[in-house]
Image: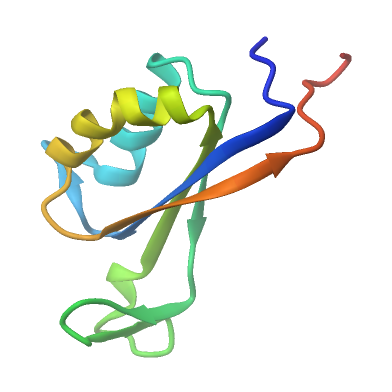
Length: 113
């Protein structure tokens, strides 16, 4: 298991639920890439409302827009790992936003460790 205790990087990838990479939902393709590249873990969060660059409001309250809710893919790993996979992530995206920030990991263990 990768040791992540201490200073690392939190990457957040903001996309829409209907964004795709080929025939696959983009969030699934991103998580698959992150897993294959050996990242410590990734989480997909489905938001209940939000807007992006075009200021279109997406919410689960409006039936016609509820199919494209905001999604956030989060991953924490070393700066080197994040930098190494960033070009592949960038190639997969046609819109959205990626943010990076420092994260201090105080605990990282699997079940039974």
